[in-house]
Image (tube, rainbow, N blue to C red; front, side, top):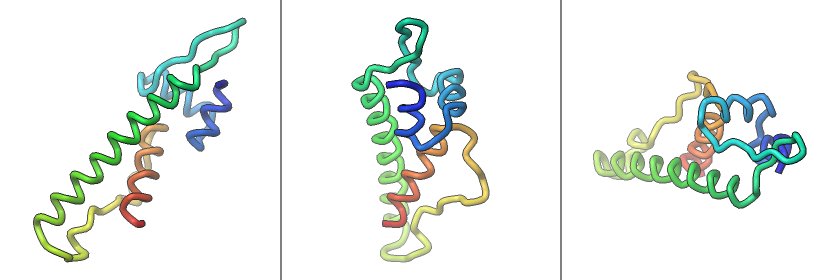
Length: 103
């Protein structure tokens, strides 16, 4: 997979992918003939781990909120719309949390 393929899969820019690699937030690509590539299995294993971590965090937050009050709408985990994510992982985690919290 090229940087463009990875960016398309994460719905972000190539520059965000570069920042994510530099920050250590995702595994770096291998190089073949001077070009950067990810093996699809390695990329999707990393993505699976990140999404599972996000989902587990949302589940834990949701369970602890339910323990505080039963069926009270105010106990629902809040998603901040004022703090913009600063990197691709934060963007992806925010998107996934929004999907999990509002479905």
